[in-house]
Image (tube, rainbow, N blue to C red):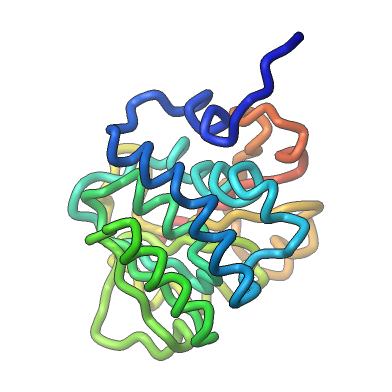
Length: 215
């Protein structure tokens, strides 16, 4: 009989260099989100059993392609319950993450889960991303929050016009799904598109993409 894959094995199938602390933090996500989702519905009820594939691994698609370096500042636009920001903060403990959302109860979940996991590199912001003042970031990340055109309008003013990674200039990195032809055309941008199924082989990632727009 084929051995059933545990949720954490789904992550370690693709990433092998986690510390014991990171593995513990990843393991604890299931119970923490399960508990908070009962109080504040931040994840679809039908998705909570698929947390590691549909939320954690999906968020880590960014880590698979963008090797963020220590000291970088990342803003998560419309983080919801903490995606992609919290999985990325676990993966990159020396990178600073600023998770923004306009819905107070979602930011409460972000704060509670970050505190429970002992994440020292996460700061939460309750408010629209346009209200962030006096802060600059190296990258903006987002997951299916708004059309690309809107994300770029919000994110670009917050980004430093620099190159902090060898292969990538600072910019916007967003997780998107489906046929993006019209959305990209409407944005007037020419994003780099990376098909997630090319490196995460689960069927769930069919027609899911990373769009990257450099400043």
